[in-house]
Image (cartoon, rainbow, N blue to C red):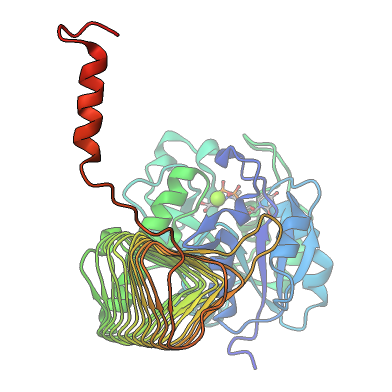
Length: 473
Ligand code: UD1
Ligand code: MG
């Protein structure tokens, strides 16, 4: 059920020339998701439908990235301007049931659903042929300027490149978001002409055309000018990222999350953090990362698609990806936990330890300098410093099993496939190539040989060979 009786059109066919990138502007990542995703979420949050996206530059890539999202796509090839983009969707718009069109530039990542909803409300109340969203900026830069009549209605939008010096001083700019009465729009859409500095069909010229046809155009000014930030360059992408990060951290702090330094903390759009979790400086939570109450992450930690349980700790300088850290477990400092790993309740992964596809049972410990891969480790196991699972024979990966309560001495190599039985002991420095039964002690190393007095004898022999004056013999 749609809250607003409107159809939506997102313009995303532009090349993004100012990005100077081979990648389509819509696909540049921002807080872990494509730029277009931010706009799409804002639009979908209003409950309008259908949502159509105009694509042109790298259309296949954009359609693939947003497949299965219930969107309609229209091709604009080649893209000849924002007005031309709407012309490309003309038939779809005309056929749409809703007689209001919400048209949104695809490069506005700070736009919020409530602002779009307010624009649609203002449009309905105003009763004009179109209502555009404006913002007032200290530095209106390259944005289109809004020219108002004495009665406050909108006379025209003039692009910065086509503006007079006087018009350029107008601080109110066109945000690139419009509510149109569909029938009025279609009456003038065909009249756009590319007679401007860029030789493009400007959607903004529709305003002047509507006025010439005797229609009214209104504008709603967004309270927060940041919502009008358009991303046209890498510098603007970075500004948007900074603002979005700050907004995300502010939301989380308002909900009870402790963030020591929001300026250096990155919480992706789809990451979730519970109240009373603590994020220390330079922490990055990416993808579908979850951090539970009482957990602490950072400083300098990067977690991707990772779940951190209640009261767990991920200490300084860790990288964790697609793994689970259960309640009250501890990871780091300087640990690398790779996909499909699960660190059990109260388990410990210490410094310079790498885990891959490994389950570490409750209370088990790998405190120092280890590589544990393709392993299943039961509860209460102690893995000594420098232990390595040799899981790869150059062709295949093999599993290691370490059962409950086993003790693996320091500097052990476990040549997989191999199983260490419950409660077994492995002597330090062993190379273990065969299974060890439960309760056994295994030694896989050469016995130490001690030769008393050997060192002194060697020195004397060396001295004799040199002769009394140190000459070579
Ligand atoms: C546009 C507005 C400007 C406004 C600014 C707000 C016009 C002519 N100008 O300028 O008044 O202040 O946005 O950010 O509309 N696109 C297409 N097909 C095209 C060209 C563009 O789909 O042929 C899409 C782009 O992918 C982009 C959006 O339309 O998402 C806006 O295009 P862009 O080139 O960024 O316009 P601006 O110069 O920013
Ligand atoms: Mg733009």
